[in-house]
Image 1: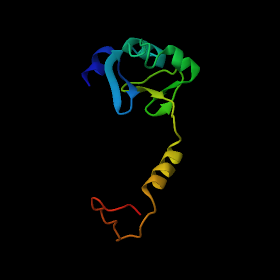
Image 2 (image 1 turned 90 degrees about the vertical axis):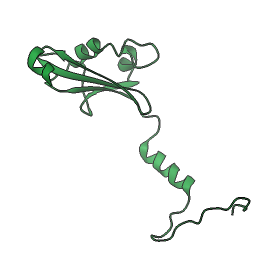
Image 3 (image 1 turned 30 degrees about the vertical axis):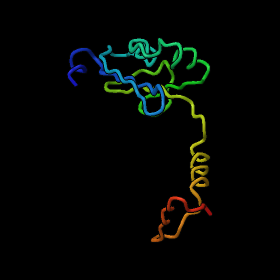
Length: 123
C-alpha cells in the first residue's frame, strides 16, 4: 500500500453491520495512533442504530485487532485491521446441534436419502 509510505500507518477499520454485511474503510494515520482514534477517524461509530460508542461501553459490541479482542487504548501498527464485532446471539455449538436435529439422523457413508416424490406422505 502506498498510504503507509507517505503518511505513517495504513489502517483498515471493518464493522459487521449485520449478517454477511461488512463495511470497511482504509485510511492513513500517524504513528502511535490508538484503536479509539482509528475508530473516530473512520466515522463508522457515529450511528444510532448500529454499533456506537455506547454499545461498546456496555459490552453489546466488541473491538479487536485482526480477530483478537483489544482495548481502545491499544496502539496500532502498520496495516492493522481494527474490527468491531456484535455479540453472539446463539452459541455456535448449540446452533450446530439444532441444525443436526432438524436435518435428522445421519446416514452411513455411501447411502443417500432418496428425494420425496410430490404427493407422497411423509413418514
